[in-house]
Image (tube, rainbow, N blue to C red; front, side, top):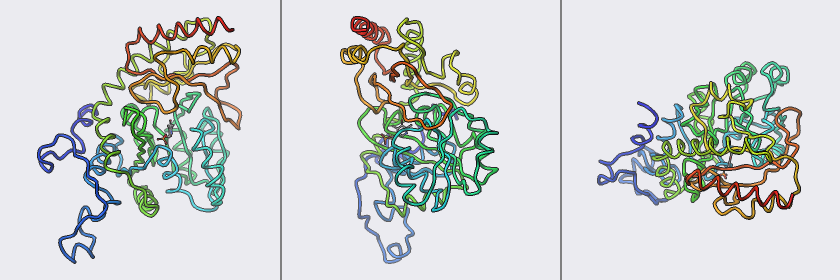
Length: 384
Ligand SMILES: *Cc1c(COP(=O)(O)O)cnc(C)c1O
């Protein structure tokens, strides 16, 4: 079956739920047992609310099928999916390779909490060669964390090549796949051990719930479920339901996000105010060939570097947009525009000279969006 079909038919049990097409919301902490035997023996599929309900298990099953993994765990946010994956594979005294273009709060977690527990982090350039990574591997390196394309700068990483180096050195490979979703890229089939998604973004898809997923291959299921269970991570039926509901339409939404993002990106690239557009789906992008090899499509998020101009000019442009809201979490149906601040500690990767912006192409009409963007450049040029 194709993914578009799996999206619709996975994780459902209409016969078990009065014919309801989607698994309804279960709200439950206590689950009553019919006998001492099931109470003491832990033999029921559902024994305690924290360990899952049909609503959460349905979403887990859908994501797991899409990721082509062995088991999926839900977490209360995308960030907690990143931190759960890291905690599942790292112990005191271990060393972590973290990509320099990682989502900011994941970087903060490494620099504070992981450090406090005796785990050291080395940042590597998103454009590192596999040979260079091989040379930098330490005897205690236990994880290589990849995020592709990178947050803010959109570099595409060679997941299979980096995974081969990591595995040869005895390290696990973790991939934050939020930009692509498991529909457009499947990290586990490219060599990753744990695939991470901020389901908050395209899976929920409507900017109204926070949710994360971590999917393990067979060799990493026990480690993932151990940490997840011991830490007491759980997701409410309401949030899981919103994730499942969003997932059903994700294929058509993503196709439209990509179509519009390509139009906007091409339009930006032709503007005199623009230095560069950062979007791997553009043939001119340095990550284009890797993207073409490993991804089956692009989502709606891309970067725009402006030619150097005053801060007030950028503010005038963004403040006056009617259709592009200013908000951090993308992947919903609405268009967004934000300024981007980079935290980078190693050489390599993309470095803008002018103001760097990030746009999310929503599901509005592309012509309306371009008219809003055009008026924005008029405001910018008046101040600049
Ligand atoms: C947004 C995002 C996260 C965090 O997701 P939240 O649900 O906001 O915690 C993690 N990784 C990436 C790449 C993201 O874009």
